[in-house]
Image 1: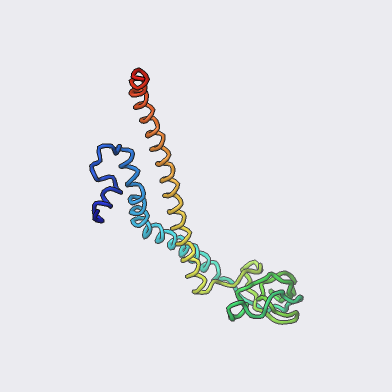
Image 2: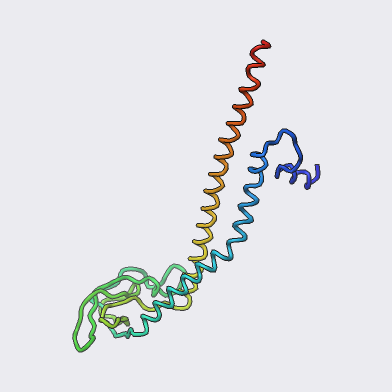
Length: 196
């Protein structure tokens, strides 16, 4: 059997008289779901990326009014000095008690500091207009990471939705198939019982 005949048989296009319409529909479900996934993937990923870019742009607009001041850590920050891959542990920020001066007053509160920092060390703290401590502004790499993560989550969400729709349609087809078999049996069953 050639691959074209195998494919035609798999897709229910082999003109088998025993194949019902529900069988043909079920044969096309997975290829159609894959085609829909491939067709909608660019749209879904671009929408997710656009949403993240809009969110980041709004955050950056708010961050323009921020300023940073030096703060002295009051406690050591738990964690390694280096992250597992050898890069600095600055990406591991832990909120730690610290002291800083803003608006001519000394303030004490929790600030984000890199893991492994020791008590008495100085870190830069970002403050908003109201003097509240904020996380440092996002770097270009963090923005790219958020865009990639949002695109992946959107693709997985699309795949899950299509998968759920596939399962639902198969269940409906199974119900219809069972109802057809029951109807056929009700028509044939009495003839068999009369002959025996």
